[in-house]
Amino acid sequence: MRLSVIAAGLTSALLWSQAVSAQSATQVVTFSVSAISVMSVSGNPAAMNITTATPGSAPTPVTDASTSYALTTNETNKKIVANIDANMPAGLTLQVNLQAVTGATSAGNVALTTTAADVVNNVNTVAQSGRTITYTLSATTAAGVVSSSTRTVTLTVVAGP
Image 1: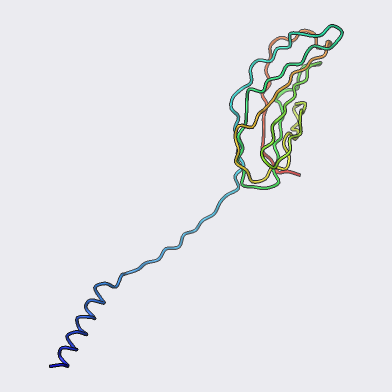
Image 2: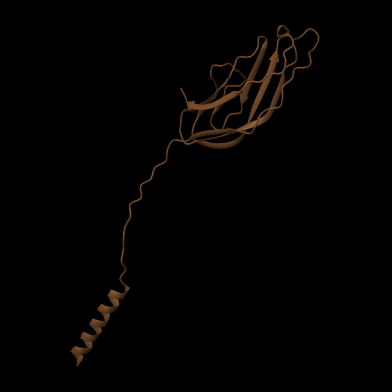
């Protein structure tokens, strides 16, 4: 009788063991992160009109710091360059100054031409917004009267030196 009680207990334990054992399966997850370097601007600056001068001096430059940019990059050794779609009329200079993102360096006031020029250097992994863009328009007296015109400024994130 004792042997049959033990046998019944073992059978019961085996049945219980099979009932609670779980079935498992596996999966392989493949992942990567691509190079990301993107930026945006907040809008367009207001019209810049030179309207005054101090007697005996060149016309008074005007500035606009009403726009900003945002930058996200997961790369290192990047920079931001800027250019305009057409050169400025004789006697006029349009400069841009971008506030650097954390860890980077601003090039300060940079005169814009159709050739891309560095405006922010030493950009490394960063995600930041609200960085100020300041434009300055200056004129010599030789510029004369210039009617309203526009230039498209292009800011581009590229590989740094």
